[in-house]
Image (cartoon, rainbow, N blue to C red):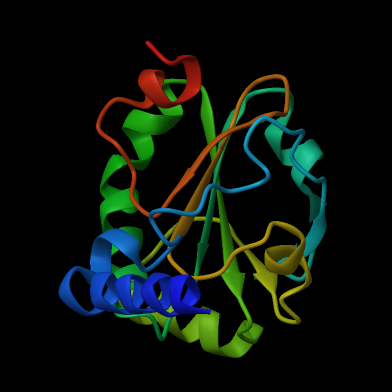
Length: 167
């Protein structure tokens, strides 16, 4: 019991003193999906079309970004991702935005207000984020060409090759 109290205290202290770095995944907990094949999913986009992750990915590397409009760190991360979008796509990496728990109306208004031109998929009932074990947002999943989860973290690194290939 004492060890559990210490672990909880450390986690809370880390969140309090350094929220951007640990808000997505608690730093000392490994994600059980790393090294496993990413679960396929089908969600609606803002146009109401159902699209599966495997169709969208087309056998390419992908970044799944779990986020929400109400999350200040997510908004910052989304803006940074938008700035790097072309650079990432030039590396033949698909970017997949998954909004967690919000309606089409909320996300549409946010995209319109902020001039965001990216595809987003709506996980209104949080089923996909639950399958992926997302315990906080923002969270990035890095998926290799083979469909295997390479890494899970709460920020996007400068060197994507290192994430995907361990270079």
